Image (tube, rainbow, N blue to C red; front, side, top):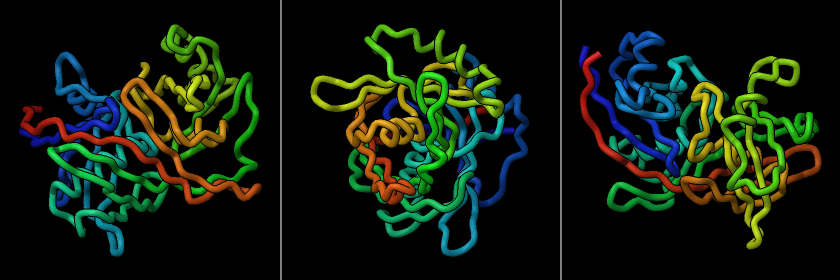
Length: 259
């Protein structure tokens, strides 16, 4: 079976995207894992499908981790698939309403030129009571579950080792969690590094992770290995609402792979 694919990245967090408006290919977990493999496949942190949805939504987004398993919401993936929808000529070229794992999302292409630009993605509201202290940090769900912990000297911190150790702490996270490490920068921004479940490694950026780190720190400007982000949100005391993730997106290439 030949699969036509498109490759995008959001601040180095990269994805294979399939246009499934005319039907979904029957891919097994092992085949999706092969597609995402960086030595034997295309190479990506995850795979997404853009499929049909009911009015008023333009499309449905399904996200698969690089281990081939169906995942939860992916913030950078959501921003990339909106850029892909623009490339396909869907919608008005700027505003996009779609459905993800965690429900409806609104997004806006703020700029686009020479296959790169900036996309603003609406995230779900978060009840303040669900943001809880946990272990040495905080736990919350921003579409995907995240544990956030402050560290010292984040550039030299063992994200892979400590992230893997915490990710498998079933006493803390029975359902599993993504692990984020943060440190304040001298210029007032927040530096973030993330170990992602499903990828089982550090990724260059994580959209739901950046959002989680912004919520617990109160910071709106954040820095990852792959690029800079802004996170907009309002805190009412009982909830965090009007949450928007803003960051870079790039179209890399398209091609075919035989599965």
